[in-house]
Length: 127
Image (cartoon, rainbow, N blue to C red):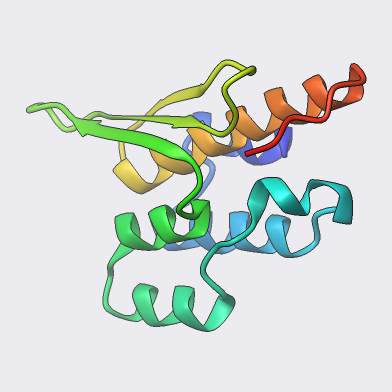
């Protein structure tokens, strides 16, 4: 997950589609113990359908799922920020990128890292 967030921060993804597919793959391969944090979310077929019509922000939102709080903004000069809150007891993920979908996924990745670290400290937060 940290590699994914790093790729978002250095514009390592050529397109928003590549970032979305990268996050989808990470979530599909995630360990079972974090499933409650990343479920429900759009399935691969739904993500593919959204990417076919260039609905990148919608695909990112549906990949994050309906249980997380999120905020996305875009400035007049084009930079975007994303904020994702997974659980109350852990700080939200915040991320800036040129593309709004990448900003949102970078924030989600950052939030997941924080929640997983919190879980390793012995806590088991609920979404």
